[in-house]
Amino acid sequence: MIKTILAAVDEKMPQKEIIEQAGQILKQGGLVAFPTETVYGLGANGLDAAACKKIYQAKGRPSDNPLILHIAKKQSLYDIVKEVSPNAEKLMEAFWPGPLTMVFQKKDCVPYEITGGLETVAVRFPSHAVACGVIEAAGVPIAAPSANVSGKPSPTRASHVIFDLNGKVDMILDGGSAEVGLESTIIDVSQSIPVLLRPGAVTKEMIEQVVGNIDVDPAIFSKPDETIAPKAPGMKYTHYAPKAEVILVQGEDLSAVQMKIKELVKEDLRLGKEVGILATDQTKNAYGEGIVLSLGSRENPLQIGANLFKHLRKFDFLGIEVVYAETVPETGEGMAIMNRLKKAAGYKIIEIVS
Ligand code: TXA
Ligand code: MG
Image 1 (cartoon, rainbow, N blue to C red):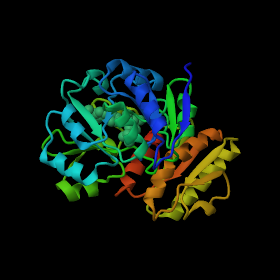
Image 2 (image 1 turned 90 degrees about the vertical axis):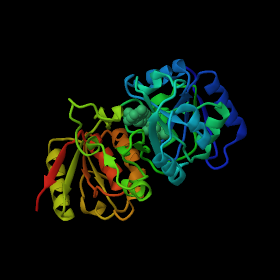
Image 3 (image 1 turned 135 degrees about the vertical axis):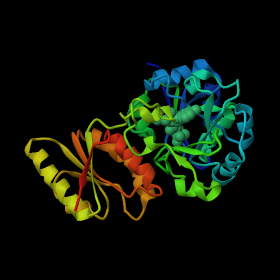
Image 4 (image 1 turned 90 degrees about the horizontal axis):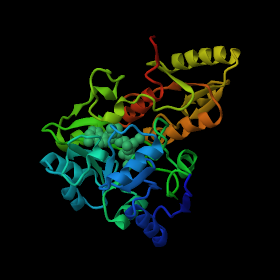
């Protein structure tokens, strides 16, 4: 156990002393968890292999799962990657700073320990004032995976980070709730046609408006084939889940979905299980039994994305054993929501054909 410094920080105008202290810790090879607009990150000096090793230890993360390097100005990209393609330049112009991570060929200064042995490196320029302040104060690119214990839902508020990592990291900055609530979009721009590796708030449709048609890693939609390595190594870990068993119930007809969930809940309650339902504002009042949490309005997928991990963690906190979840259409932000839901469910989906 180490003594973790907890500090509340203004998310728009972070206090200078606190940011400086975080920067010092990072310079000395320590670990600092901080808010970003997507989820909280666990940062270390990204060019220091020994510091990054501590990230893997604190999270219990497999060493072949590479980290994202975070920068706070566009020029820093050219110090760490070999080539920036015209497509990458356009995407940077359109979406940085923001929830988009791009994969490039790495320069020699980037240690293999952070890329899981790959020749490529993932880079992101976040838009959050605290994240950018911390990166600038450290004066180096900051390696930062999501600040959760490996396998748990990503943290969207400081209390989640404290629950997972208190006593394992040097400092945790509390900057309120993460706005997006889902991890960044990842796109590989190291090849001629960009490949979407992880969907996020910067959607496929938004990217295609800037660079035309892109490819999509099939691992986004279905259980990765264990014989083929997914292009984003982290995507192969299906245990991305709360303690409860999550089961998705999917169908064209929402009332048929509700009927099925009600039937399943009734049966589980009869067996004495603690049951949760992940619903939406349009459906939440229809269930009557079980613990119902609404993700938000079906007309506002951004709200649904922002609440997903928070609710999955809440079900754990409440001791729920089985969660039945409604699904959303897989377009726009829905692609990211469904990707995380399917992973949380270990790809268990009940299809309602009507
Ligand atoms: O929103 C985010 O991206 C957050 C915040 C903190 O910035 N970070 C985050 O990091 O989600 P992490 O480590 O939880 O997820 C990083 C993902 C993993 O799936 C990893 O396999 C993939 O990025 N990745 C990292 N480097 C890669 C590379 N060179 N090629 C392909 N995928 C890579
Ligand atoms: Mg993660």
